[in-house]
Length: 245
Image (cartoon, rainbow, N blue to C red; front, top):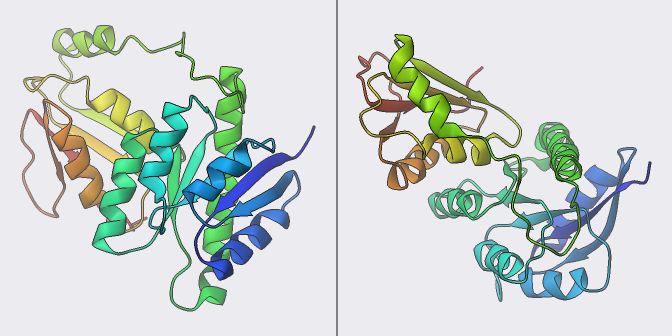
């Protein structure tokens, strides 16, 4: 099996080197090139074969959001993993990128990079492989064609069963690639579903609040980040706070 071909997009030369080294150390992954911004990345995609893109959220000239929009506009169907900082702006923009179709995200190495490197490397490698596998399962990985998934879930039928089943709560659990899937499911729920919904999504602390707010702004049902000790109510979805095991 050929290696997964990855394009690293980041305005920081240090971060491009760090991320490239993380991925190239792992068998079956090959960083084929790097780019300094979205515009640079779009030009390189025209010339090389890319299976997965890692994309910085905040960059000069063309940031992560604008790059995703251009990829979609150009019908370039390559899975994208966002790299985000911990600022409020980065967190908000990351959630917007997920809504635009990014596969998943990771938080960049912070503070003492050498201490944080193993956590980020393990998470990044896992998500690169998962993004590629999902692309393969759709049968259009790296193809410059935006296709409609013929295996779309009939969420309405499943949601209708909730009314008839007598269940008392709905729990949605997700990990790698989960934000995109959670968004696709939760936005289909009506505001009067009649039961509380609990969402557990593996995310760093600080990101789940923005995730809940982004889901809430695009859903009929009310969605909030859960707080310790609060009493749950029907017709509200609660996102478990991140950074906890």
